[in-house]
Image 1 (spheres, rainbow, N blue to C red):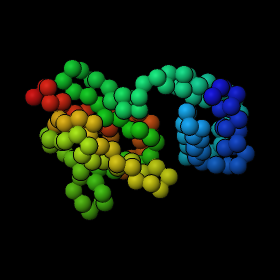
Image 2: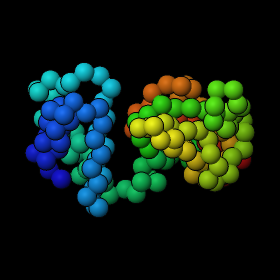
Image 3: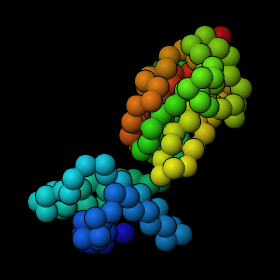
Image 4: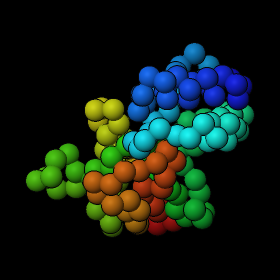
Length: 155
C-alpha cells in the first residue's frame, strides 16, 4: 500500500467523521484510530508517510514485533493495538498478574479493550513479571511496552 492510498483512507475517515478504520486486504492490515477532533489537512501526508514506513518494515512477524529483548535476561511484552489497558477482568477482581509472579507461556497478563472488544495480552514465554509498565485503566498505544518479564534463562 502506497502513501497515496493511505492518504485516501485518512481522507475517508475525515469526510465520514470516523474515529476508527480497519482495512485488511489479505496481505496488509491497517488500523487507524483517533479519539480527538479532525486532523488538519497538513498532517495527512506526514501520517501517510509514517504508516508507509511502518508497512515497508513489515518483515518481522507479529509475535516478534510484540517482544523486544531488553537485555539478554528479560524481554518486553508490548501492546498489539491501541486501546484501554486493564490489569484485571473487572474493577473488583484481583489483577491477572503481579510483580514477582511466575507466568507460563500463554497465560493472560492483562486486557486491552479496543472497539468494545476485550483482547487478552498473554505471556509469550515462561518467566517472572519484573515490572508493570502501564497504569491500569489508561490508554495504551500500539507497540507500547506493558510488562517486563525475566525469562527462564535468567533465573
